[in-house]
Image (cartoon, each protein chain N blue to C red):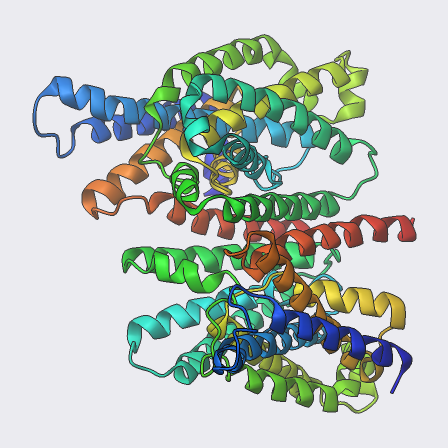
Length: 322
Length: 315
């Protein structure tokens, strides 16, 4: 398998994954379609757009995060980033009340939360990545525990909440690809486009960054500035995906490791699009299979957690054996 | 009796008394015996359950740390608690009419299997960093939890599962917690065999050298840990980090001779759970925050502290 994959041209892999993503999108829109197309387009179309945005945000943020950290096991969500976003949301409801939080325009809310998220994550990243001698495993473990702390704090606050408000909040926080908040789609799409634009400008440096800090400084990259900027963009992407579907721990890891494996070169020109296409194919295709073929509803996130967790353990065990 | 034990006993008695007198219903409702009824049927069982669960989990954590030779392992960071929960769920589905003790036996078996799997994975890793061990355990727990969630989701049991997974003692009444005494009996067994676990903690080679039947002791340890975890999960749900925080702090103060430290570990475990439960009951009275949630916050903070301060010692 491995030897064969090496001989395939990278553009072929990109095309193949794009085709897969396309097929799953078409399948999502058409399988079991009854009724008028105008209804279908608006109903399934918004859902599809939401899933594509989420897939894009998670895939890109994970791949870039792995590039910066020089590690293929770390992802923003494994070290507790979407848990942080969930905690922010809980704090918001806690201080404003469910009625108060609902009366605030969700788009405004999203902007404020994203801004706070960017600030907090920069602080946290700085703390974690300063000091080159920090052990990777310590970093991961601290991240995992921090994520757990954020989750416990969230549920702690949720308990203190009035039980009625708790129900409202819980609805908003359970990871589900089925109940994407349509109010947020517009602003999420705009934010994604803006992030993509900046990423496009930065893209020539990605491959250099993956050589490590010293090498990239040697090659003339303003490492500090680029990495900080990328961290901001990653925080925005994490906010987008979490705002739309809630926290999912392992999806990014699953998609990114597949992309690194399948793409013959480690060049970001190929890896990034492949990761995005695989993410779309997994998310949309998985939704089609579970929803249409097995008539499950929100189980997709659970299935992804399962396989993603296995991949994580596999990577850890293999990585340490080397 | 060592000095720490002598200090700890009055503290825990005070906590237990506070626990009995904390609650919504007033105990001083005159002479019609209602106050007494409340104490016997609800308050006392709850206080006892808290102490038994706390002591059992803290001792289990200590034993696991010796077996895995790692400071950061305990039932909730090695997949044991999640496996026990999976067993409870399976028992609920396969034999819904089984009494709680039967379900608990089932949970013990899965907890045993899960923990053995964890130790097997560890054995496969030749050069393991100390920090990777809990990382693998946490992820294994996540995977097992995903399976449990999936099954619960398929059979519409999410709600009832959520209710008994979150370390909640508000359901404890007389007749609903007595299984925890089994856990206590096992804690005593652990104490009786403590010296062997101390030797196991020094490594397989040393243990075999001094003539210990290594595999037998490991199996005994696994059985104790799995059964204690299963009794706790079956009666009140999970209490994360307890078995990690207490043994670590005790070992920082008193060292690693289990024969000496285990009583302190057990008493401190009981005390910590009592304290967390009182906090959880007072904060939003008349509602309450489950002890598992309170422990999740406090425990992860202490865990982080242990992780980050340990590094500065090592340099």
